[in-house]
Length: 269
Image 1 (cartoon, rainbow, N blue to C red):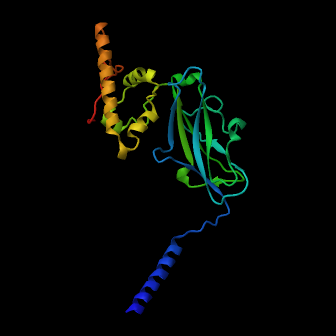
Image 2: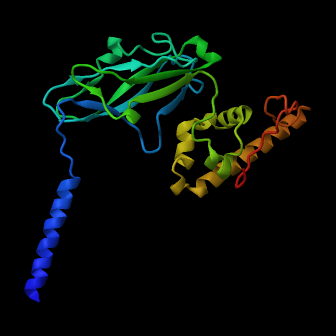
Image 3: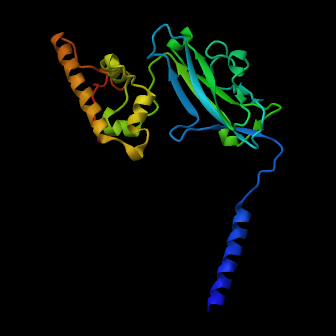
């Protein structure tokens, strides 16, 4: 019986080893490739606005990460990024962002020796035209003597840039449900105004910290902000009443000529 058990165990280990061998796909391509890395909490789209910044700030740097697909080498390897045209609201290189072939940024587009990942800058410019429009910087990994493009789904990134108030990316169903209620620009501006002295920016980062990961929403914090903004709104409306003004409302629309009343809700859509 002992010999039989030993034999069976030996056969099992052989098959297990062969199975593992079949699953392993040894990299053998002679071409090195490059892919963008998308953060777990993000995707291809990044939103940026200058609206929170001091008027003297004219540049904003967005850092994106790329990773090699191939062998690590002992020398630096420059790579190229290039704008993808076709969007009707495409940003203009040199006007709304520093062109990808400009040495101010292209000199940073290098995978260092011994590395397989690197973060590189995309530098946005605060042009006056962004005061009344939102533009798109769509770009991809180009080909050169060091790298070719890798997996198709990891080849493009998109950055929207504006100097207007825009809905934060993470003011989505979770923020709406837990503390913020339906999005509105007047509401958003009110939140900015009442937290300005606290050094808080009501932007993507603010909402991500609260509800960016739905599996770990801190309901103590979402409750705190719900009551904070609710009480601040009550005080604002009381001041408006003393001045003979209506309660705070969103801008009038065709469907709602008076403008929707600004309010904070939770646990409802």
